[in-house]
Amino acid sequence: MTLTAPPRLALVHAHPDDESLWTGGTIAHYASLGVHVTVVTCTLGEEGEIIPARLNELRAEAADQLGGYRVGELRSACAALRVNDHRYLGGIGRWRDSGMVGVDANHHPRAFIGGDLALQTEQLAEVLREVKPQVVVSYDSNGGYGHPDHIRAHEITTTAAASVPDVLRVFHAVTSRDATAAGLAKLRDVEGVPYRMPEPGELPVVDDEIITTRVAIEPHVPTKLSALRAHATQVSVWQNGEGAACYALSNGITQPVVGTEFYVLAAGPAEGAETDLFGGLNDVERMR
Image (tube, rainbow, N blue to C red; front, top):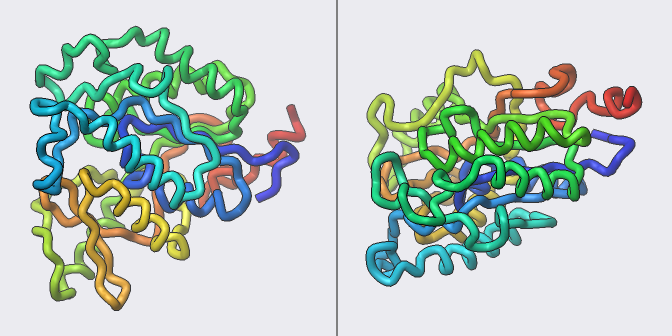
């Protein structure tokens, strides 16, 4: 991977922890190669469900201090992943976690989904014009699993990236159905997994036929696990001494940590992108 311009990657995520859950291995991989990595987080995750009981009073309906607490978690996760540059969309605290569909948080004055779409898009475009990434990553049109903030992140990323000439490719982070099934099959033979196995349809996965890009992250799985552990209010991590690893969110459902992260190319040239987000972009750069 060699580009005439310095390689620059930008990832747009809805909440603290999404950068680690969806793209942690990818961030660590490209950071290890000297790529400049920018992460844009759209909200502070104020509506997240809290796993440790001792922190329960941080929740939105109590002290409403979870967002501030998660700032520290995100800082630690970004340090573990070696993120060069972290931004909050519009500045820290500008947009608030909207919660899931149909909850009161949807109507908060600062709710991300209630904000001006054009303003949010311009806030992101401003970052992209400054950073000049060749590659931008966010979610698909369903936000990965239907969360309103993820869908809004997809919307603003799609429009903002299209307006910045430096952006050569846009990818959607997805979860492979086949890789998830294989990871769960291995975990079923491992003793001591503390979470329950998912029922069909409980995990957000896509058919492998639509996946265009597979980034190998096996050497960086320990780093991804460290970043996930940093988000202790939201994520519980388990691994044994033989390399088996998984995590669970507040729902307690087992999710395997696999050695590949998966993407669908949404915009830009496909040639060379099978295993590298930047693959083949040298020729594109020379043609500009």
